[in-house]
Image (cartoon, rainbow, N blue to C red; front, side, top):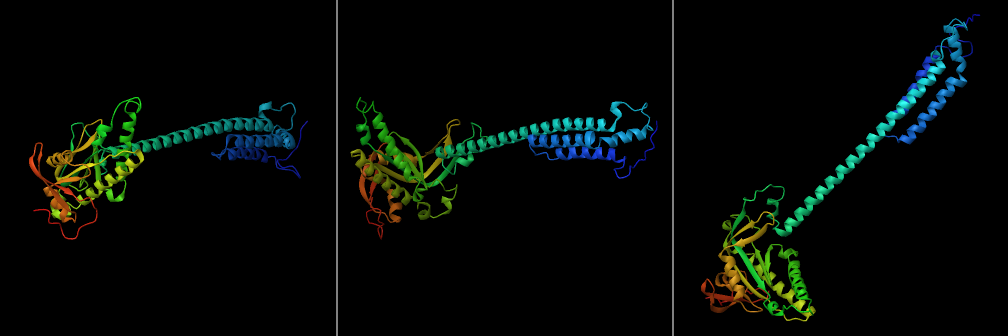
Length: 377
């Protein structure tokens, strides 16, 4: 029995549109998978809805078009109908399922790699932040150990152990300030927890001294170290090499005034501590200025220090000084008097390793005198 069907049925869709419709459905699957940053669950929902819609279209609502196409291709012979896999509606449904699962696997794989990429980027960002934090911490710790103008020499540079950083300065003011009474105050007993409370008080004194360094007017003061209850500091270390030689003597030693004010501030801090701790500690200060050599020694634990005759004499000015006084050498007294400070002679004293020296006591009143005092001969 034969059917005489044309390629286009009256009042219905043309039979040739069946492959076209199937291709459109396939393109619909591809369209759902184009949005790479869409979540896998939402993409699964869209693909599933499109699969159901496509299967309903081909297997139910328009299944008769597939039957008509098969009948037209095989001349309407029922005995010569093709196998199941050659029918357009079944092949379309199978193609839809193949595309559905293929795109589903690709979507899942894409989301996996997107998540993996996100985790790697997050880990890289965290490692970069940790590296920056460690660099900042290293820089901060290094600047606490070394002066601010020296720390950059050691940051980001692979310095060998034999590399020595050193710098010569023509005019540096060196201060030694000690609390001699602390040696008599220190004792180890059960009352003060074997000397722990004494050390706690010393730590409070040194910490209060360090607080002065954060003030803008003392930004030029550089703490060198502490030796027991002795505080060592210097000014004039911020100048570059040869800078002092290019300036006149008055300008090159202008930082001596800063050191004097710092010494007076140390005494004021100690007075405040005495009021709170019910003690009567007094400060003994020695000052001297002149050329020094500064440098950093050590590789694992670098330490900044200064050396020279200027440092030795400043230490002797402190050790041979008087409580509550600032003792200076004759040269330093002249330089301070040119800046407006007043000094009076102590006389000639014997200094270990230096012989007989004429020293002076500084008037600790910060009020600048008008004309220089005639106390210096």
